[in-house]
Image (cartoon, rainbow, N blue to C red):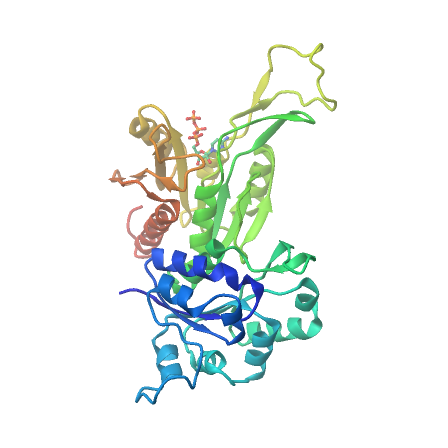
Length: 403
Ligand code: CTP
């Protein structure tokens, strides 16, 4: 059955992003019911949101003739998740104070499902202690608050207050709808490339956007795990609520990972670590007339191998392998030599797999010998499949089963 999203839209300029938000939610298979405040209808029309959601949009309590069902209660009862985006200072203040004087506030007061508030306003309004106090009050009461992004604001100011991109809001909503089946797990994920400096302006690196690792971290967080993300230089948003440890080189990634690895119950190594670094890093930019045509290289530590060597019996270790040749045979060797429970193999030569794509074509090699091959699918879905296997492995370990 489709998850039902109750989306409240209030009167801020960021309301212009809501048709896109609704569209993304509908594309993700959700049934979206929009309720607008009167001010919101000045920024985006009910007709637009009705068209993209495929459902009637409500904005006036008194507009319709009497119906035996009490509409705001029915809408609230049937929702799996309730969201207000954008949420103005006004609605935040009203909800925090228990005011219910229109359809949206009345309905929001009656919801019992998880509720997400996405504030969006001028930076000085957002920083106003009254707004901050109201937001803290809402957090204490169990509302989820998605912090606004920073950047150019419609009022001309620069600072926090922007409504996060609809893709981020969808991810938050998915998180609230996800089963909390990884609660109690401490998950460490590595992501992205590493950069190995040659001089202050040049470096060696691996092709990697970090999308796969960030997808795993995002989904693990949504499913209730504590998540630490050790990531090389990446250019994609990382969700709030996880511990993000940015690193640059393989050696730094190794050191940060080793510092925390003993506290982790699950380690998923999606990073594309550079196997070699320039043996010498020049403090000054190397001038071309003095440059050697050869760059001597030194090996980097194999982080995954080190983790495999010190793996505790209760730890679950997942590796990735980007292959271009005989993916399965190479993968099996890696699974054994690095003492892994699961290896996710991508043949990066196949279209739709690997770098920069939002999709991946994965094959899972299990320690037990089991092999699974999947069709092309979004990286988020691959992430969920990996985490499903982790959950199953944990169940198995708890009941004394084999890995
Ligand atoms: N990895 C690592 N440290 C390294 C190299 C790789 O932790 N120095 C991890 C990656 O994060 C990935 C896995 O090892 O989970 C496999 O990486 P890959 O580059 O495919 O394999 P390598 O072991 O480096 O072997 P090769 O490059 O020879 O295929």
